[in-house]
Amino acid sequence: MTGDRKIQVAVADDHTLMRNALARLIGSFENYAVLFEAGNGKEVKDKISKHILPDIILLDVNMPDIDGYETAKWIYKNHPQIKILALSMFTDESIIIRMLRLGAKGYILKNADPDELKLALDSVMQKDSYLSEYISGKVISGLHKDIDLPDEPVVLSDKEKEFLQWACTEMTYKDIALKMFVSPRTVDDYRNALFEKLKVKSRIGLVLYAIRHGMVEV
Image 1 (tube, rainbow, N blue to C red):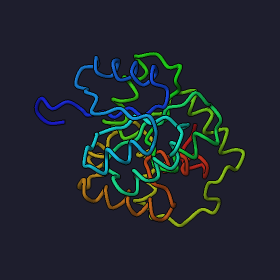
Image 2: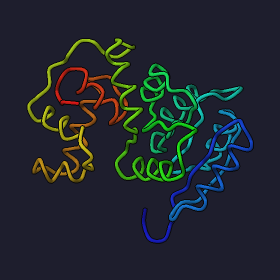
Image 3: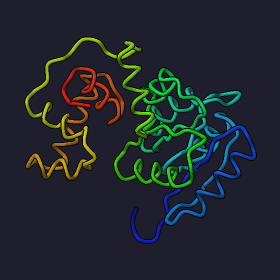
Image 4: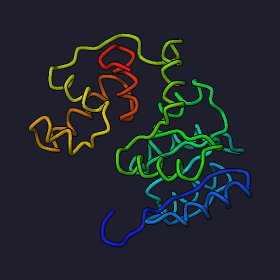
């Protein structure tokens, strides 16, 4: 964020009362403003296709017409700069992992308190990811059940392994570049190469791979 510009948020939820309450709450947060609200994925696509582009979208998983899965997939493919924070009442690990694989940067439950929502928005914007301790536990449980994630390890260079380990911390990419004594552009190259090799789409995907293959301790 530069200057006094507020972070623009879109809120997509098919329950009007929930959507309106979330929009009012987010609008009360310092440095945040609600750009638009939508009741389903079709409305989201219509808005974004008209170049009404939020910085981040709070995206309900279960919506009519076009659900959160298809909407996330479309956003990630066509406007990857828009950060997706998935919203749901469900804690099933397969749902969480599916949304993360479709490009979501984080996952938050509808029963979360306002402080957690603010923390999630801040974390996605600043660190490119957010999972609560509870949701992280569900994800790890899902990994142990072999849910639709790459099985075969791939050959990584020493620098890629080092980057992957740092990516599993709370450090920003800029901090990682300083830690590795390389330029931010080189860190971007490591990240993009790992996205391709590991067939993942986000920093969370990198973390999940590292956990599954024993490259970091949990």
